[in-house]
Image (cartoon, rainbow, N blue to C red; front, side, top):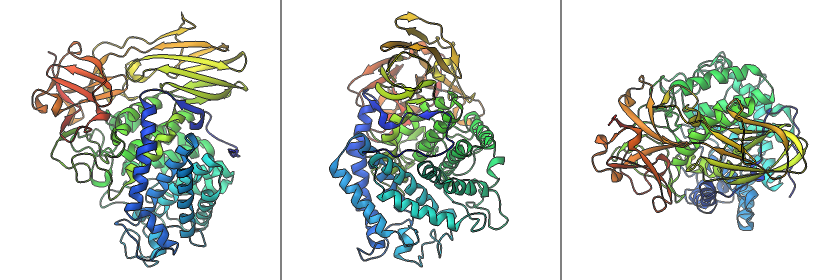
Amino acid sequence: MTTPKTCYRHDYPIAPAPFTAVTLRDRFWAPRLETNRTVTIPSVLRKCEESGRVDNFRRAGSSLPGPYVGKNPFDDTDVYKTLEGAARSLASHPDPELDAYVDRLIELIARAQEPDGYLYTNRTIDPRSTHPDAGPERWSNLVMSHELYNCGHLYESACAHHLATGKRSFLDVALRSADLVRREFGPNARHDIPGHQIIEMGLARLYRITGDRGYLETARFFLEQRGHHETRPLYQYEENEGYCQDHLPVLEQREAVGHAVRAVYMYSGMADVAALAPDPAYARALDAIWRSVVESRIYLTGGLGSRHKGEAFGEAFELPNATAYAETCAAIGSVQWNHRLFLLTGESRFYDVLEQTLYNRLLSGVSLKGDEFFYANPLESDGVFPFNQGAVGRQPWFVVSCCPTNLSRFFPSLPGYLYATTETAVYVNLFAGSSARVEVAGQRVEVVQETDYPWSGSVRITVHPERKARWQLLVRIPGWARGRVLGGSLYRFEGRAPEPARILLNGKPTELTERSGYASLDREWEDGDVVEIDLPMPVCKVIADSRIPDTRGKAAIQRGPIVYCVEGMDADRPIAEVAIGGRASLEAHFEPDVLRGLVVVQGKGFRAVPYYAWANRGPGTMRVWLRNSAG
C-alpha cells in the first residue's frame, strides 16, 4: 500500500503525527478504539442499511425502485461519516471483509452521482423534491438543505479512504463534486454560502491532497461571503441572526454565537485558511472567538451549546445544567478546532480544552458497550426530562443520527492527537500507553510512552533515535496540573495551589523549563534515554464564576482531566441534598468491577463516577454540580 505525497506549499507550522504512525497499548483508550472498530462501526453501518440511507443511493443510481426514504433530505451524510470511520479503521486493522463492503458502498455512491458531479440522493430520486428543507431546486434552501454540508463530509471521507487505502475510487467521486461546487459558487457565480459548515474543511483537505489551490480558494470564498447580504438574505433561524454565523463577516466576528456545531466547524475551516493561505487576520479573529468561549460559554465538561432551541450557544454565562444541550457533534468539532489552533501556535492552552473535552464531553457521547449514544449531554438529570432527543437514557439511533456516525469516524483518528513534530522538536500532547514513529532533526525516532493515565499522573517516556542528535522534547504540563481549568478564568480549583510537576531525566532530577505550557528538554538524545514525569493528581473541588446562575453555591469534583458526577443510585439521599465537603473528605480509589474499571471518588454519603460513564447502568438522576459545604 502506498501513501500519496502531499503537494501543498503552506501548511500548519506544527505537524501532527499521523494516526497510522501511533499504536495505542493502554488500558483506557485502546479498548475503546477496539470497541469502536468491532461494535460501533458495524452498528452504525447496520443502522444506515436498516433506515434506508444506503438504499437511497441504490434508488438514486437506478438499481432500486421507489421514493426517497427518510424524514430528512440530508441523510446521505451519515453514510459518508461511517465510511470515513471504516476507512480509518482499515488503515490500522486490515479487514478484507470490511474493505470489500466499503468498496461496494463506494460503487453505489458513484452510481448515484449525476453526470455533472451533483450528489444528493433526495433530489436525484425526485428532482422536484417537495421536502421543505430541500427547497424546490438545487441549492435553493442552503440554510437547511445541507447539500454543501453533505459535500463536506463526502470530501473528508473520500480523502480518509484514499490516504488509508491508496485507492482513488471515492476520491474521484469527491473531486467531481468539488469541481461542480467551484463552478457553481464563487466571485463570478453564486454568492450563496453553506447553511451548515464543514465543506470548508473538506475543500482544504482536497487542496492538501491534490495541490489544486482552487479548492482552498473556494473554501475561503465561502468563509468570506458570510456577513455580506448584498445579493442574498441573511441566513438565520427564526429570530437568531447569528444562527449560521452569517451576522458579520468572519474576520469581524469576536464571539461564539449561533448553532454550536456549525460554529466550531466554521472555526476549524478558518484555522485551515489561516495556516494554508496563510492569513494572520484569521488567526486574530479565531483567538478572540476562542477567548469568548473559554471565558463565558463552555461547560466544565467541555460541552458547547447551552440551548436546545437552535442547538445554539447562549449569551455569556448562560450555562444551565439540566437543560444543557452540549451536543456530541459540537464536542467533536471543538476537539478538531482546538487541535488546529495548537498546530497553528504551539500553545498548550488549546490542548487543555481539547483534553478536558475529550475525556468528558466527547467520551460521554457513546456507551461503554459502544452501541448507544447521547445527542445532548446535560450536567444534571432528574430522570424524567427527555433531554436525549425525546428520551431520558442513551439511544441506539436518532432520526438525525449525526452524533453516532460522527463518533464512529472520530475514534480511529484519536492516535493522531497524541504527538506532533516540527523539524527540531517532538511534542507529547496527550498521555496514553503508546508508541509513535516520528521524524525530527532529519531522522526517525520512536517515542514510547508508559502510563496509567488518566488514573495516574506518572508518565515514562523512552526515546529511540536512529542516531545521537540534538532536538527538543516538549511534554505538555496540563492546565489542571498548573492550577488552571479549561484555559480560562470561568472555573477555578478551590483551595491550595497544585503541587508542581516533577521530572527526571535518566533517573536524575532535572530543572523544569516551561515553554508555552510545555516542559522543554533540549539536548542531544541517545537511544534509550528516559524522561519520567510525575503529575500530582489530587481530588479537587471546582468553583464556577458567580455570574453563572446555575452553579452559585455549588461545587464540582475533578481529578486530573476527569470531571465527576453523582448518580442517584450512588447516593444515600436524594441527589439534590448531596453536598461536597472539604477536599479532605473526598477520597479516590480504583474500582475494577465498577463500569469496566475506573477511579471513583468517595464522599460523605455518596460515590462519584466519571461523567463520561454516567447512564451506563440505566437512566436515572445525576448531577455534576453539587451543594458546596465546607464540612
